[in-house]
Amino acid sequence: MADPVLQISGLSKTFGALKATDNVSLDLRPGEIHALIGPNGAGKTTLIQQIMGLVKPDAGSIRFLGRDVLPLRMAARARLGLGRTFQISSVVPEFSALRNVMLAVQARQGSSFRFFAPVLADRSLTEPAMAELERVGLAVRATVPAAELSHGERRQLEIAIALALGAKAFLLDEPMAGMGPEGSKALTALLATLKAEAPILLVEHDMDAVFALADRISVLVYGRIIATGSVADIRNDPAVRTAYLGAHA
Amino acid sequence: MKRETVLSIAVLVALLALPFAGQALGHPFYVTLATRMAILALAAVGLNIALGLGGLVSFGHAAFFGIGGYAAGIVASHAMNAEPLFGLNLPASMPLAWIMAAVFAGLAALVTGAISLRTSGVYFIMITLAFAQMIYYFAISWPAYGGEDGLSIAMRNGFPGANTARPVDLFLISFGLLVAALLLFWRLRDSRFGAALQAARQNETRVAAIGIEPFPIRLAAFVISAMVAAIAGAMFAELNRFVSPSMLAWPMSGELIVLIILGGTGRLAGPVAGAMVFVMLEYWLGGLTERWQLFLGLILLGVVLFARGGLIGLIAGKVRHG
Image (cartoon, rainbow over the protein chains, first blue to last red):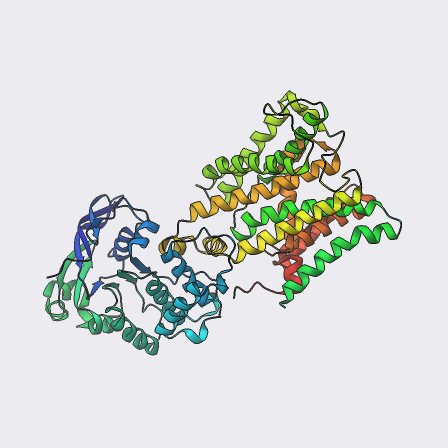
């Protein structure tokens, strides 16, 4: 088996008396979608925040592309290729969709200290940005300010941004949240093509999407991973059924 | 052409025409008034880089403005008394004073910014205020250049090809600097640097999540902003032929923020429109009543409540980023 892209071992984080992350080990292999599910308050977002560098773990290690990323700040991890979308859509509201993606292209080129040349005339920014918008199906809305995009369109925009970064792994935090059935379907299809680009760690509540997309599933309950396995394994795992799935299975 | 571009040009043409119209109508005092507008606008354009583009509400830009003022005063007084400065006999030259102003204010901004920019929101406002007040009290207690009494400029520094004792020449130099600063602001705003700076204002986490550190971007903006404000300070001292610690004090910082809010935060010509209205009110209302700032307060209240984009926003509409 190929080396995992992202490898988390023995990760722990305590907030006061609350063990938000309890000795979590998890890996993300090339070409897979690894879904992370669990009830509300299981610590999914805290885990993602530790991977991104927003929250510092108390113990454990996070290796990305074979490199220990714990000492790195969020921006440095992003430059290595950790692409992230947010649980609550997070884009630059006054910028158009195109300019949001252009900013990511600029970040990837590593050249924010250019003071004079206007960005809108810079085809090394506009062309790749437009290409990513086309891939996610948002090209027609390129000039609309991000604040005026619909919820689903903002999700698409976030994915275009992650693509423009040339991410080597995607951390998608509830991409389906707040999407209607039509939108979820379209996004599910998009994510299925996205995994050819880079593996995806998918935090998601929408079980239809998870079962349709995931190659492997890990179940997080009270900060601990109680099971990891294929879709079939998880569906049939008695501990998971009691703890979480219940009504769904 | 976009509406805002037309408006920006119209505002500048109005400012350029004001002193000449004033002279033609027999009010030579308008030249000084217009010079004051241009210089305050220049300082506010500087602040607008940090505040408007970067969202960095610096309540300490008076310090940089004042450092610029002292640079002009010190260059003038050393040249006057033929005393060497840094071991050199330097000429009474405006460009020299500008360079000194920009260098010293830039260094001060680098040091204070490196500390202040670790904070945000109200803490940032307070820490920039604290640094500026430290510099203010230093100026008061430093006897070499007049201390509390300030420093008079007996004869203005010179500018090649101009007679700086003539009000019109002084206006044209100030106006030229203002246009240069506006060009700088415009290019910065639309550049990669400007994109990162404005994005960090709107969504810091997003900017970090795509791999751009907001801190060095903001620090660079803060330093550039301080340098422009300092050059304005140098011209302010030349205009008044006097520099005093009050140029460094917090009411001056507040005044610069008021100019920007009045004209339109982050807008190209916002500071120019703001400065023109401010100086006009100061002159007209100030002639009617000593309490003219009461009316300024009411106008500011109106702008904040009903016209968040300031005067420019009122006429040209909301900002659209291509």
